[in-house]
Amino acid sequence: MNTISTDAEKTPVLVTGGAGYIGSHAVLALVDGGWPVVVIDNLSTGFRFALPDGVPLYEGDIADGALLARIFEERRIGAIMHFAGSIIVPESVENPLKYYHNNTAKSRALIEAAVTAGIPHFIFSSTAATYGVPDVSPVAEDAPQVPINPYGWSKLMTEQMLGDVAAVHRMNFCALRYFNVAGADPLGRSGQSTTGATHLIKVAVEAALGKRDKVAVFGTDYDTPDGTGVRDYIHVSDLAAAHVLALQALEQQPGRSLKMNCGYGRGFSVLEVLDAVDRVTNRKLDRDLQPRRAGDPGSLVSDPARIRATLPWEPAHADLDEIIAHALQWERKLGEIRGD
Image (cartoon, rainbow, N blue to C red; front, side):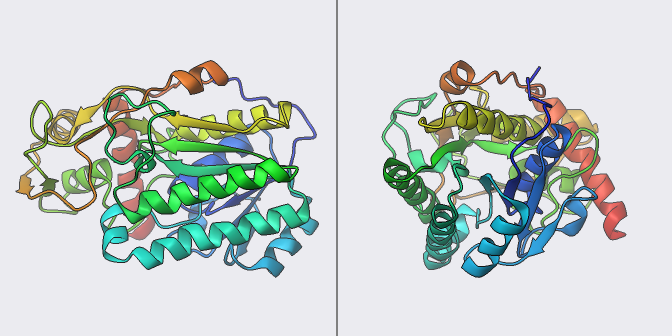
């Protein structure tokens, strides 16, 4: 059980990208824990319906310094959870400048605005892509960070900026390096809603519901047990809970910053995931075997020892079939919302 405090007088939190997939689940976790929450989102990939009633939404850009200053003052913001950005690895290879603009340059603008306003705590949505192709698996936080795609570099640059800023300003930060995020809110309040998403479990449940004809398997010649890519899948609600606990840790020790993996320490191959979807849905998905995609490592599995030692974080949904079932439940509900 995650011990998220419900004490009164909590710090108002600004969630950037809070109408998106992971951001909306962080908003739910904060609201459930009694935190005052404000969202800024340009709604390029986010949705108003993903936000709970009563959560203020400022529709705008995180690089808009005047808007940020107004939000900080009006809402008395004391912490930022930063999710806004672009996240598709192959797209980052094809269009690197988009990623260095959206993920790095705009994060710099956000950090500068936070420093100017004296915001003391900053939680950053980082990624396991900063490790590139690690020499060992599972991968721990002290492994070399040598990204193999612009997405990973854009996130690593932001980690570097936060470290440098925290060294000279009154701000501490937590960079949470996600592995593969999947699933949906168990209560059906939010889920992955982006059209054309590339995440495997999202694609697979769409196919299971007849929204796609087949599921592409990119790469069957990796050095893995069945030749397909191996990833560590973490339930989005467990990830959101980790963010709230990380915020509490930053508040409790203002002089300490943190960098932690967010994963379960267990990898599943693409074919194992598709077999699990078959099992949960009681149907057989059509697999379309394709060459490898640019920028994809063969295996990426976390060593979660640091987060478990640092935070009172106990995953509640660390079962692949449950992750898939929640994703499937949301996909059905999303069809109702959209009238599919």
